Length: 120
Image (cartoon, rainbow, N blue to C red):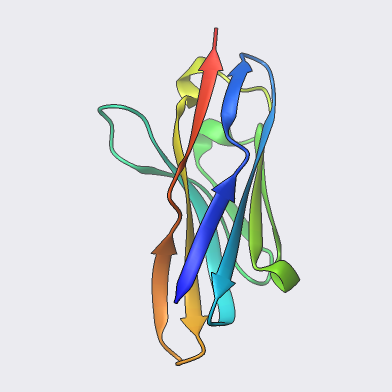
């Protein structure tokens, strides 16, 4: 079994910063692409940022220049540094990873979500 456990959400004022972490654990052979999505009330889940094992990254236009995604391959952990937060960034943030298990099965896993609330 594979689990993704997120941490780091919370309440912050507009203009502030938060750092999210997501650690994958379990029967992992390799962790391929990892990323962060978010879902605000009444809206669809949307991609925030992604990073592959080689380090290449991609960002949604609405976070470029404010958020930075990074990963520690040795720890199977992905991070999201969020700066200059805006009230419209308020959402539940989900970690996502494409993982090859020890049984050589490649699957997408999701974390449980962490709430980020930005007050104006």
